[in-house]
Image (cartoon, rainbow, N blue to C red; front, side, top):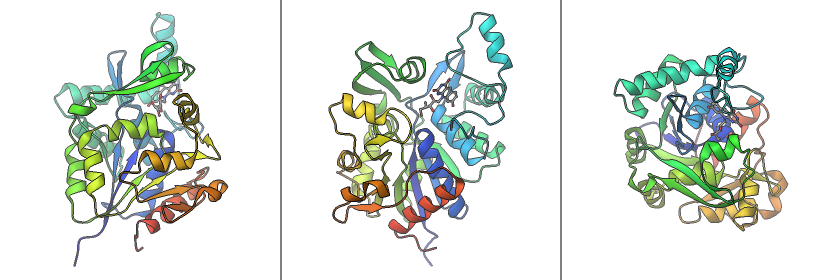
Length: 312
Ligand code: FO1
């Protein structure tokens, strides 16, 4: 009896976390591992901030701020308000409850745990049963080359509200980074039955992961289906600056451009029903990919699993 099938999801940002949570709801415990982008991570106020990892953890734990997608639901801002009065940096909004997670992570890392070990510990304490891991425990930092100079990711994304025009993206550290142990185990696992690239920004969330050489090589060699859900619907991003960045990089924002970006390892791109006309040939599938409700996430997760051949 072959082992139960397992699936690897690649996720960054809010859209990625939503599909990851849909997959976690549909699949039995132990059947999913979520590899998360760390290119957005940075040191701030003496803390190690890992936005994409926290967004996945909060979303899987049902604690994510439903409006924003990041940070906590039911948040308060006493610490940040007081920090502002003390002349500290308040441009990156860290709520009181959210700060607890950052303090815990910084403590665990300070005790010598790897990022993977710290995330596993935090997931356990949040009663999350889905395996979540950074793609790599080595530092990978997205740097955004813009008309206002070379910017750290959160400076570009939050402080400057993605206003600067992007000329190029650099993923500092990616070329030397190796896969986190849990991710390598997942890719080595003969029970791996498929890989799903969640609807994350291809330039800001997926590219930093693919810049880790081992990942792209392994995805190319995989004998199981690799599919991507387009984060572009009708030529626009569902959330965030994807379409703006594509235009600034001289690319036509469309679901087709997404499939071309991953052309060397991708078997299929899932596009929204609005883009059904683009879905020519057998490398595209059409499904509702805008996730407004929990049911939408579960429905899209079921469709993705069916596309990689999962038998319920
Ligand atoms: N995004 C914002 O646009 N403004 C913020 O103040 C902000 C704070 C923040 C705090 C914790 C966290 O985990 C995420 C936060 N984000 C904020 C989102 C974050 O910048 C993005 O989610 C990722 O880095 C890109 O997907």
